[in-house]
Amino acid sequence: MAAAQRGDAASYHRLLSAVAPWLRRYFVRRLPPAMVDDAVQDTLVALHEKRHTYDPSRPFGAWLAAIAKYKWIDALRALRARPTETLDDAIAVADHGDGVVSASSLERLLMMLRPAQSDAIRLVKIQGFSVEEAAQATGQSVSLVKVNIHRGLRRLISLLRTGADAD
Image (cartoon, one colour):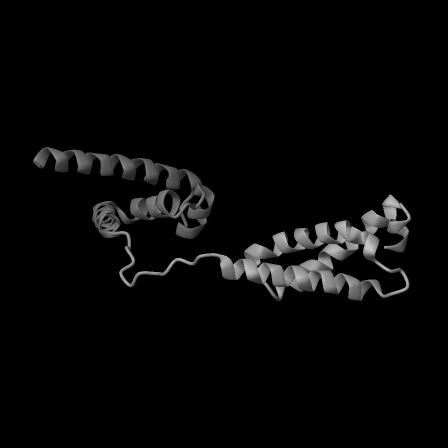
């Protein structure tokens, strides 16, 4: 810091680079995660603005810790001043009924297919496996997995069309 006060820009840059991780550790233990980066930046700005007050005959760590402590107190005051929203006991929860019905309908349709076809469709189209991974999991060849997916999807389309015609 003494070199930085004399105008040594490289020393000042090294100082700020060394101080920032220490400040982060200091604030991580004392503030909510969302406030840590702001507190570090506020402290670095304060250090920059008050660098002329540093006395080189005194320990730099204590001087920095005092600035960090005051910025921590400022952050706590800001946290207390923020209005909080009270939670209502009747929090609205999304209705998952359509998802349950869709999953149930899909499962019934897949049960109408041959097991090799439904397994291939479940693995590749629903669970996101690659064709190669599905082949390893089912013991089928890669080309047979592709054929089973194609034929199974074609059969599902046929089932849905005949079901729609019946309605």
